[in-house]
Length: 262
Image 1 (tube, rainbow, N blue to C red):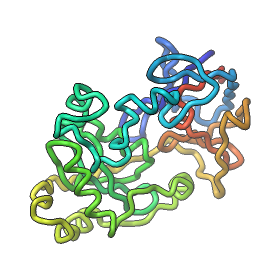
Image 2 (image 1 turned 90 degrees about the horizontal axis):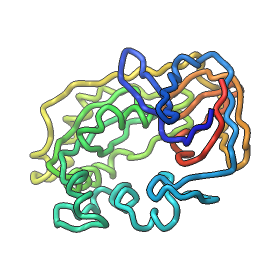
Image 3 (image 1 turned 60 degrees about the vertical axis):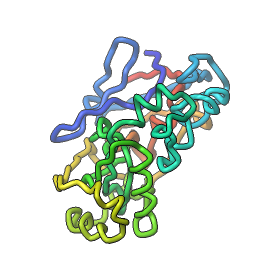
């Protein structure tokens, strides 16, 4: 069947449930684990904003013009401390108010090492699953995005904001006492930011549907391999784990049009 790729939908249960959407049809990806699957790239990509076809897309599946203009690709998506929604400014003020003038969490997540991150409260636990986190805890809750970004910046000197995706996919995970780590960092924050720390110390555990983690990881993609096929051994983050240590990042290929056979 033909699919316009978007990131997989997820649902947090005892084991994360994954699905791909093909028009009105939902494909249960968990049910395919252990089976052979095949993707054939149709040499066509579609912008996630304007819907036009192009030869190349930029980050998050946008054409160049949309990447440079739509609010979903603004700099504050990657650097929330630069958000101007609280000032009534941005690429699209109405969009900024709807998405960034909303409560945000600052959190710790363990995907490889301990990392700090920011997300809208409505994106929990989706954001953690997409990163391949095995555990997460809320650190602070702020009324809008820019404040959460300020807290993240204050913590970056002591904690990374990146995930080592190779270690994450090999399931090489550090062991951390998240509650202790959370309250030890309070002294790193100035008083105007520490006031947003949350008393919610719930630790979220996330388990992924994986039969076997690879010892070595090789990333594969449609730009070099128009046909990608093999046994699906598991799913973690937004990666399909295939045999022979190969992994396919579905989110990286948003907007790619493929035939999917299983």
